[in-house]
Image (cartoon, rainbow, N blue to C red; front, top):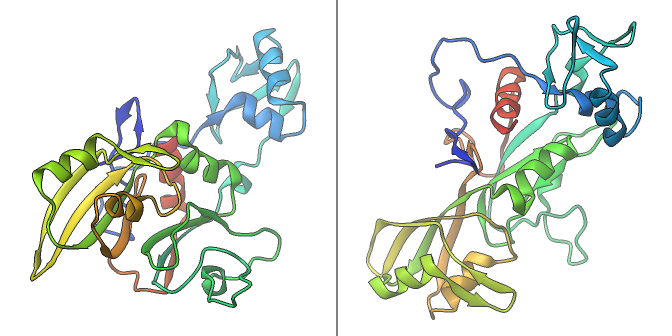
Length: 269
């Protein structure tokens, strides 16, 4: 289960979560025009024009559109060497196990607890929530200091998967499973699960694993409600390539270390 962007990618597996292969991760690279624009040399479109004109070189060869550079590459515009401090570009990424009874907002007129109250304080930036979970939903929330990373994971055009564990009262029929995976009509459009699998249960309660590629407000609950089914518990267990690590207890967070953050960026590049 993975991000859908042309080809399948493996969910994030880092030393924090489980044992890793000892092989070294690939070097992180970035789009040349993006780095030049971030350097303040012009807009990204202007940098693309500059590259296309043949005025930019990488390690002595003329750069072309689509080139990527890493920490060891030498970039020049004419004879001027452009230096990038790539270490400063590494965003902070935080995984949080949200319990029921918290909202994903900095301020609440009703005075309810907010997830931001639990996060470490930042002096010169702020935490950006990647996606939301409603008041009664628990599970994985991702926070970052990088707006571009947040957009890459949240924007609908990237079709990033969200995976949930859903407990319902009753059991789905074959017809209901077909409806949920082919299309349920809601007020704001037709939605469906890309995958739905039964996970067993006890008594009148049954668990299911579902995957979808969008994040509309209370979407999963509304899909089941449209069939007259009550969701008694809902928990997000994966967002894109990141699984909720079992070691993170409810109300606790874990920050990715440098190696894990770089690997996440590599997987999304």
